[in-house]
Image (cartoon, rainbow, N blue to C red; front, side, top):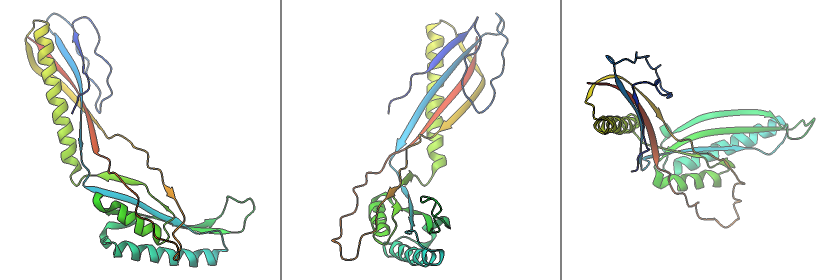
Length: 237
C-alpha cells in the first residue's frame, strides 16, 4: 500500500507547523539550548470487509391512516420472514425507525404513509441475496450497505502503527540529512479517520408475484479503510 508524503520541519527559527490533532500541541521554546525536530506522517490500511450492514426499509402507498398501518404491518412481517428465510439470524436484524405520518408530498393531503427501516448484518458474500429477498418481499426503500470488519480496534491499531513507524523513520532520515543526531521523543499525538462513502438508498417497487424473478444485483464489496496521522516532536542532540 502506498503512503502519503509526510511534512517535516526543523524548528530552529520557525514556529511549529499547524496540524489537526486530538490534543493541543505544546509550545516549545526555540533556542540553541532547546532544539527540536517535528514530523507529521499519514498512513492508511485497507482490508477486505468481513461484515455487510444492509439498510432495509419500505414505505406504503398513501392511504387513510388505518389502511396505511394495516398495509405496513403486512409488508413488515413479510420482509422479516423473507430475511429469516434467507438465513439471517434474528440477532442480526435491528429496527432503525418506524413511523406513521401524513403524506406531505401532496399539499393539504389527508393521506398517510407508514415507513419502517432496519439494519441487517450478513456476510459480504450473501449481501446481494439478502437484499434481493427483502426487496422481493416489499422493501421498496433499500440498498445502502456499510462494509466493516469484526475487529475495528485492530484495524485502527494497524493504521496507527504504520503512521508511527513512518514518522520515526522520516525523522531519522531528516536528522541524517541535516547532519544532526535525533534525540528522545518529546511529544506525540494522533488522529484516526475513516473515509466516508456515499450510501444512496435504492427506491424500487417490490416484484409482483406474477412477474418473472430477476437475478440479485451484482454487488462488489468495498474495502474497509482507516487512515492515521501522527505528529511527533523529537529533541536534537
